[in-house]
Length: 146
Image 1: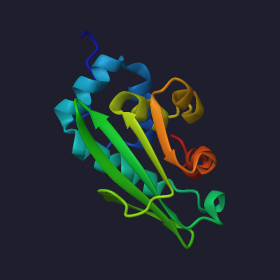
Image 2: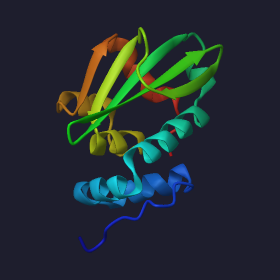
Image 3: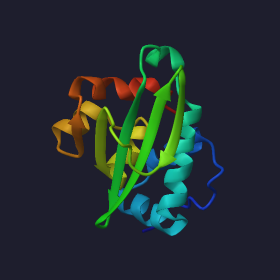
């Protein structure tokens, strides 16, 4: 691992984080995220998604979107709630999400960094979707990509 990534700085900008993910191998991403602490990194990512919410893209939406990020047999569920033109996030499972999106750590990070497309990941089997499949295609558009 000649170019191991260092993500100990959780306060980096979304653009810096995305660039680091784009430049790293899958193995380096896994090592870096695990070293920094998966939950701490995911907490920051979902906070960033809340901050990068584009209200106009979801003007007609009131719902919960369930994300489940997996790594080494562990699940890390997060809920993004959209209501009244705003998004909020919380750790844990939604009671009745409109859609649940499940991905392993690296594909998830490549998706949110803009390196991968949700439809492509779904077609490769790297993103599992349950619930409203058509709605799931809109989810990525609700957030400004770094």
